[in-house]
Picture 1 (cartoon, rainbow over the protein chains, first blue to last red):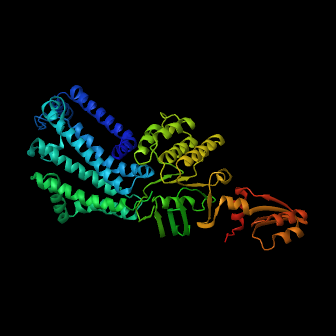
Picture 2: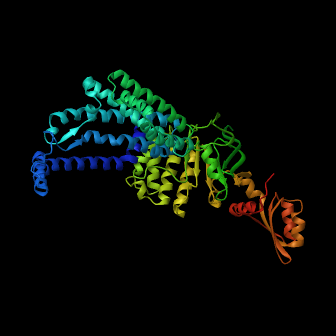
Picture 3: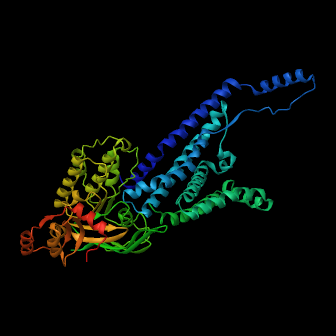
Amino acid sequence: MNKFTAQLQVSWLRTKMTIWIVLGLIVVSFVADFTINQMFVSNPQQDIAEAVGELREVTGNNQLEIQIPADVENVNVSPANLLLLLLPILGIALPLKTFRPMMNFGDSRRHYFVRLLMIYGFVAVLLALFNSLWFPLDKSGIREYVQTYNIIEVFGWNQFGAIGIFFYQVCFYFFVLTLFNFLFARPKSPVTWIIWAVLIAAIPVGTSIAYLRHYVAEFFIALLFNDSLVLGMGLNLGLSLILIVGAWLFTRHRTF
Amino acid sequence: MNTVLEVKNVSKMYGRVDAVNSLSLDLAEHTIYGLLGRNGAGKTTLLHMIAGGIFPDSGEITVHGKRLNKGDVPTQCCYVRENNHYPKNARVRDVLQMAAVFYPNWDAKLASQLLGIFKLNPRKKMRQLSRGMESMVGNMIGLASRAPLTIFDEPVLGLDVLMRERFYRALIEDYAEYPRTILLSTHLIDEIATVVEKVFIIESGSLLMEEDVEHIREYAHLVSGLNSALDEFVAGKKVLHREGYGNAGMAIVYHGITESERSQAEQHGLMIEGVPLQKFFAYLIEEGQTHE
């Protein structure tokens, strides 16, 4: 065992219950969706036609019609995407739950922080790899039974090929982890509370004012839907770097 | 002897409360120290600052010649906290394995021996341990770390008499073989009187006394007898406490007593006894006097 594996073990011990719960929920959700799709809503076209028939009887209007697309079906989030719930969870739980145990072992703040970033990197790679491997399964096998959508398609990352898909995800997931880490790096500080308040206020303000809405949309398009792999990755990593610097400024003076 | 830890005019406030007030102390290498004080005297705050967990408002802390800046943690230092924060779902053996990588002088053989001495099941999870056993895991880490500066904050909290004795014995035996600087913070004073060489007594965040235990034993006396003889005997001596019962009384004297003074006192019907460290501490705090 070395210091990295010790911190990894502490991280696992402090978050394993949450991870198991998330995994359990994903499995239950997937099984439930699969069962519903197979058994109860096996033919949505027929169900809707029957409903229209009943409505004609009740209303006495035989002209009543409802236009429905031919491919209507219950669409679910891909289970591999649901796993991304772990990004905010770990980004919050790790700084909150591992700082004290590591300091208790006599670790320095700097080394703790560097290893925390390494763990975030490890998590980002693991989740990106999993989703990258799951995506072909979604397309070729799973969608025969359950309609799913995957963020790889939603954000258009599939235009970059297998390697591009993987690297765009790694950068974006790392960004999400560092964002939450920044927000919870020093939870007892008034500066942190101000940042929370600003962020909470920024969401409704940014989306309700038309002038700002344009910039907010541009920002998210550049971050998530970027047509250039290099620019997309660069923006995610650049923002991560800023968040890392901010989180370090918090962590270096965080008290036990 | 080299100085391992130097604390200079360190102060720390919590709101408007002075937790530590311009406190200074030095620890030399290869010595066992006791840090004594009542609950809330500022012991834990001081130790937290030394270990880099919290930061002083003013003053300097230097460990192994390196000044601690805000956010620094001292190297070659093991601080066993009163409330340890090891993961509750970790097994004892996992905690020991994790601790081992942080201390370069870690002695795995000693850690395994201590498991037997303290009757700790390495497969038990931390949450399954009693308060005393939890303290013992911290104490094992403190001992097996062999850190040149080892600090124990209330190490025997929750331990029964037998386990306390075992801990002190293990500490002394290991220290004899591998001398280092050890600071024991406790309020069970009599128990550490035989272990520590020097004590720091703090009260309300300030250092009340810094003295060799041997010196306290030599200088602290309980003198009792008739008031007239007692008044004459204590004149010019430092009296920490005085009580009267009619025409008789007793005094806690902190002063050297020569053989001739002793025989003279006995001739005047005075009885002179030693004072246990715990009582000496209580009288000292009560009187709020400082030794000059």
